[in-house]
Length: 116
Image 1: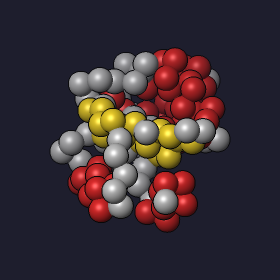
Image 2: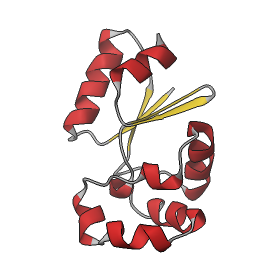
Image 3: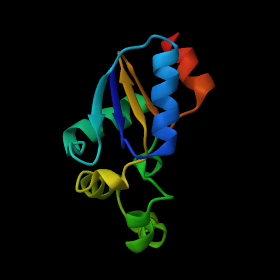
């Protein structure tokens, strides 16, 4: 599994602790220094069953400064994926990518269902 996170994020820290507490080992990837590529995002979005819009970090400073809440409704999914691939801080985190699944954000029950 791949755990895509921002090490300073408190939610990511909680998710990491949960993984450690449950003995789940993952490849750890810093979303700020190793931003997901457009191809990765396209694959992950398809595997997650979510829309591209659900992959945006709506509480992030960059999202707000770019006024994306106003812009996203007029964007195509392809345009959203292209934008997400430009900066990891736009991407909702943490992401957990496993065999046949992608989890976006940390919801303990959802993670337990897929990982335990």
